[in-house]
Length: 79
Image (cartoon, rainbow, N blue to C red; front, top):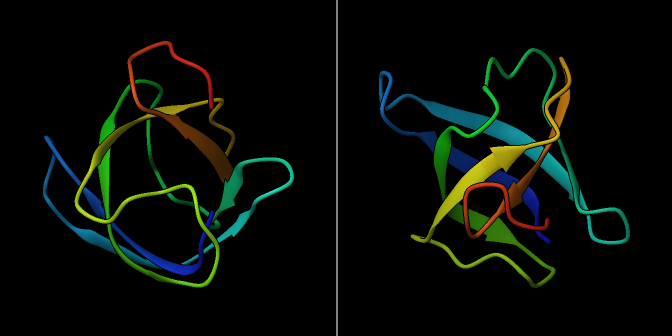
């Protein structure tokens, strides 16, 4: 996973979320008060370092908490 990610939220208001960090060992993505919902589609548009996410690819949000989430390539898929 990448650090310093920029995320585009889709299907709601297409806003950008910046300052996202990710932990490759847990696949947890962190952004305080991100407002994302389980199953929501997101697209990462930039990032530095790491591997695992492809810029421009749609991912489904999963395992949502107030400040963290994971993503999967398919709805209900593994992180």
